[in-house]
Structures are given as structure tokens and as C-alpha cells.
Amino acid sequence: MIAVVYSGSKTAFWKITQNGQVVAHCNTTGLNPCFVDPKTILQILNKKVALVNNAENIKKIYFFAAGASSADRKEELAKTLSSFFKYSKIVVENDLFGAAKAACYNQPGIVGMLGSGAHCAYFDGKKPVNNNFGLGYILGDEGSSNYFGKILLKEFLSHKMPKDIEAKFMLTHNLDRPQILERIYNKPQANIFLTSFFDFITQNSKHQYICRLIDEGFEKYFETYILPTVEKHKMREIHIVGKVAAELEDRLRFTAGKYNLEIKSIIKEPIQNLLKHYTN
Image 1 (tube, rainbow, N blue to C red):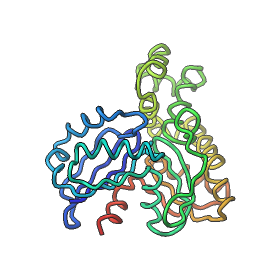
Image 2 (cartoon, rainbow, N blue to C red):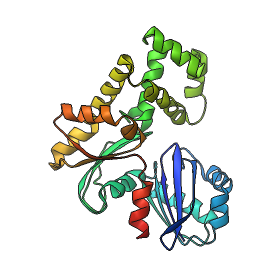
Image 3 (cartoon, helix red, strand yellow):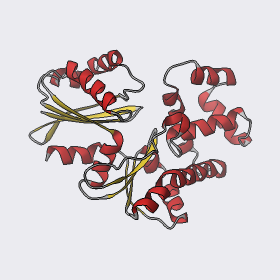
Image 4 (cartoon, helix red, strand yellow):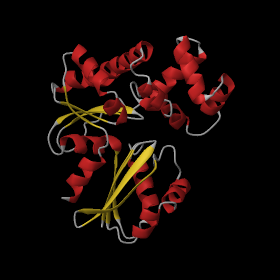
């Protein structure tokens, strides 16, 4: 058996195959080693019947995780997984590597990520070229669901929302200023809390005010990530992976057009392409 896993900070997608056929699959909470400690990871794994039942039969795991950006993080995550999947050879790479493989396979291209976080890199056909974009949800992630959650809350707390959107937001989330600040500054996983507001963005994406927030966020994404990569590598074949890109595809392509760029492909869930690549 082979398992292929793609994990953002919010959700991890698991596919288990035997002889090229999917025999089990499940989703878990995202296993970002920057936010989830080894003990919690094991607790998460033990709650999934599909993983418990197949743990001893899986011989190889390809695991692509947000937060697995250094050798130490990769080693830590692989060690934790090895204590659960005792007979598996485990390969851990970061989520950008997984996104690049899913979008380009072994061909060069520019690969962007727009999900709970944001990133971009030139992929040379073997691995993403190192850059300084990965600053995380506090200092970076422009255009991601974390970013949109942060902007939406700032607008709400500053009373800058139009009255109709403000009323809808209050009805949907029933939060006040003390609750929001407590959740962000004194509770764990503030990044997941911020991401949770992205559904409000998609549900109201046709409203002029929300549409403006989306366009401004995507402009920041292109100017921060895509344009410098295009300029440096003189490569214009662009692929973008992630839920935000897929669910706001029309606005994302509109923004690309402002910079005379075209997005070749948008992939919502890279797990399917990764599965094809690593099990064929």
C-alpha cells in the first residue's frame, strides 16, 4: 500500500492505494508541524478508522505539508508519522513542492499557492527554487484565506463595512470585539480562526464592497509573489493551486489580465494529481 497526503494548515487530504487503486481515503485536521505538536498529531491519526485499519499495511507515504519548510521540521514530522505507520518509508516535503508536482509534474513553470496561506516559486522540473516569500500568516500570505479573514475582521472592527454587509456578517458569525480579540491573541491556532471567514467572502463575492476587497487582495498577491518571479525567471507559464484560487477563479484571472498575464491552470485540490504521479 502507498499513501499520498497533501496537508494545508486547515485540512489534510489522505489517499491510500493498492495496486494503483484507491482503497481508502479521509480528511483530517491539517498537520502543520509549526502549529500541531507530535502528541496532537498522533491523537488526530488515531481518530481516523481508515488510518488505524491500514497503518500496518502502508509501505510508503508521500507527505506534503504546510510548515515542513526546513530539514528539522521535515525530520520531526517524519519521526512522528513513523511512530504510527511503523512499517512505512516516509517522504516529507513542504506543500509548495506538492503543489508544484501536482501542477507541473516534471516540467518547469511558475507555481503559486492560494489556500489558507499564500506562496509562489519557480519550479525547475525537479524542485521549487528557494525564495524569501514564505513569511506566514502574520507577516505574509497576501491573497490567502488567512489574509481575507484578517482584512474582513479589521473592516468589521473599524466599522468600515457597508451596513448591509455588516448586518449579514453579524448574523452569520455573532461575534463582538472582545470575542474576536480574545480568539486571535489569547487562543491557539489563530490562523485557522482567520481562515474560517473565507466562506463569507465567497458567499458575498458579487457584492461591490466584497469584490473590491478580493481584487485588492489579489493585486497584493500578484505584486508580492507572481510579478517578481516572472521577472526573475522570464517564465510566463503560471499555475495556481488552492481553494481560494479555485473558488474565486474569475476574479483571479481578471487580476492576472491587469498585468498582461494568463494563468494556464488552477487546481483546487492537488491530491488527485499527486496521487496519479506517485502511484503510476
